[in-house]
Image (cartoon, rainbow over the protein chains, first blue to last red):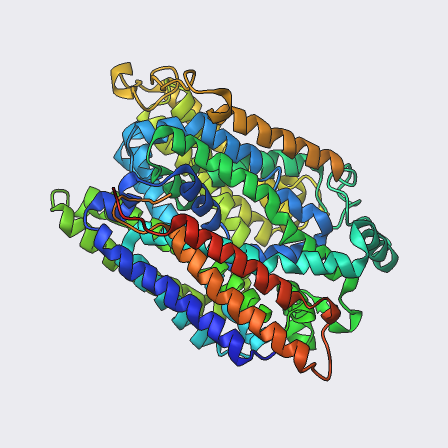
Length: 556
Length: 73
């Protein structure tokens, strides 16, 4: 694939815009509240769209289109049952505690609820996970750009990363959020034509299903009906793994405790906006499969077999294409000059929004939860803003280092989903108990979080060393890595919860007065009762939930 | 939907970018229509760049008109 001058102009204009927005917003990011929380002035729409855009890394777009090619519509579970209930739960149940406690970060909430040791553990594991994820995303993006466009990998990594570093360091979270909204719009407008044209070519949904059936003689287009057994579906997973591992632990852990996304909602201008933002995000999240999963399915139906699309390691040896290249291959199929530039810009925008989310969250957690908490407690606000700017650049440099590390040790790519089960799954247990159970103690929180994290890493090493252990962890020897991650997350969450409860019952609880604003039942949450029905967050949450149920029914 | 009293709305930035993109894509679509390539793309007959570029222009102009800065009375 080669880009013409119009395509290059479109990409260049995009870079000028994101840098220009960062430069323009620098003047509004003077205080710590401005830089790290965008002044807490975002509307529900802006916070909601950036909440979702920060989640759309390059792996999200190309990786899940590739996953749909590999696993069929089962990949949509990561957008529906693996996202929507958790996002609604965040908006309706958890957001009031985050927002009313006035915390600036998720580790900050851990400190208020459980004390410094839990905060330190949460902050360090989050920082580690963030730079690793950021580097892995960067590598994935550069690799696809190299294969599809022939771009030099080093060029892709450095140019896009430094651009992110500049605009986030200049305008802080406000700049990250503004650019994420712009990137969100570009992702949609750049990718939306693929399913539209694909459906026209395939003869509609039924035409596509018939073509897939004729090619593969297997069911790739049903969400739940093939999940009664591990061997009946391309993913090798049972519905319990999807519902409990993905739908409960991984999804609720990611969407309600990963500071990368929660930070966007903390920037909302008031509690009602903070509650509405995840609900708005969830409505758009439900639609994302249209531009990510459907192109993967259409690729399965329409892309010629001689492209030899297969896993990355086999593709590298045989000269074929990897699953991650399905989305760019679909672009090449339909997009000529101009549209191709827009499509590639959408991919770059996806990468940059994900990376900006990572580095802005990393800068906040480092500055507030590690540097201010343990290194320099009483510096001026200006000093912390300056530290945040430098940390943004440092975060990008460490991410670049991680990308080069991945380049050397490519198997790290396989561990992306495992990272979530290491850090996010137990954290969800700790935060959930902290918010809903006033008896949870400082010691219970810390030891539960530590036990959950260590047990998850332990399970991972166990299966690596003794492959037969898979039948204990994932309940089946047929389980694919994706299924193993789901079950490992579930076990580590259970261990975290059990240890937290047992240790809490054996130790002295905090006085209730110290838990006001942090725990359910001790926190007065402002009522929305005076608002008309259509302005209440619960009304929109129910509407989204209904659409979610209908989608499961349609694609059952 | 300005995010701060003194800052321009993000939707204004988005509108202007969509307008620029729309013009570029529509222009290239018209060029391809008048100079068809030797090996046309799949579904080239639908002239997607022309109507997609047009759509971006309409969206861009709409956003610019709605979110342009106005003098406070």
